[in-house]
Amino acid sequence: MFKIENELGKLNIEKNAVGRIVSESISLYDGEVFLTNKKGKPLKLENSSGMLDHSPDMEIFVKDGVLNIEFYILLKFGNSIKETTGRIFDNISSDVNAILGIDNIKMKITVTGMYIKDIKNIAKRSIEVLR
Image 1: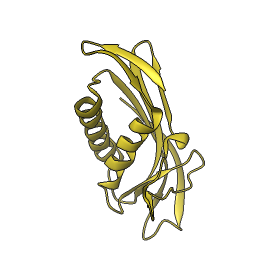
Image 2 (image 1 turned 90 degrees about the vertical axis):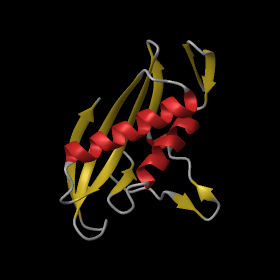
Image 3 (image 1 turned 180 degrees about the vertical axis):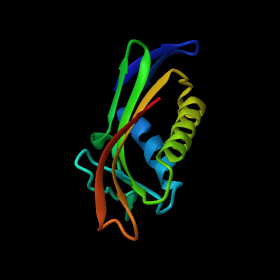
């Protein structure tokens, strides 16, 4: 849990709440983007009981009043890294602002690989995109 203070007052936020927002934003890219761990292994978005908690595979912390979110993704070959990560940044920023009331966010997405037909054949990458 971490604490953040804004015009609404003091907020206590669980790390897995932010992780859930990131996971749900990535799930919108059905088959085009997958969350991975640091080593580039794709993570399952849900199990039989619903959404999984991917927050242990993400860096989520507050530093100097700024919510920092760092996570790793795998992209389908042919997608623009700049456009896709830009849309992901926008989706997550708007969701965090709407749900948690936080607008001071810093994100880092690391593209761990690209794939063509299925996620079994991955071309490893290590491309960091910041916003």
